[in-house]
Image (cartoon, rainbow, N blue to C red; front, side):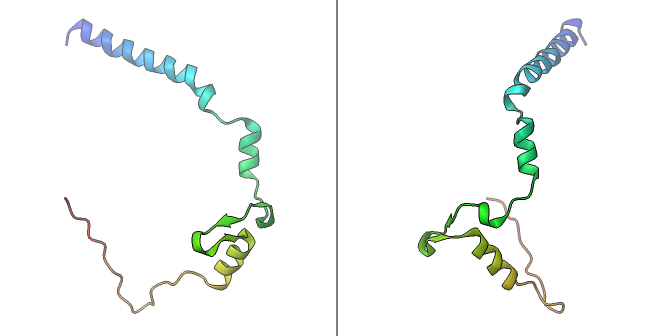
Length: 88
């Protein structure tokens, strides 16, 4: 391997490191945003969801509906439908 190839690789890595170092503060969330996102919120504090033909529905109603009607799972003796991934 020529010396110029090695220098190019090292220079590229250094440049990318500097770009990442300079751009990280612009992409990072503030400490208060991270703390707010990590704190659980009450369902009453969220705005109503627009569900198209159902209109505006409060999040609390959606949570209560989910609790009363959990998603249907396959029975123990049932066979699961296999997903087939095919090409173009």
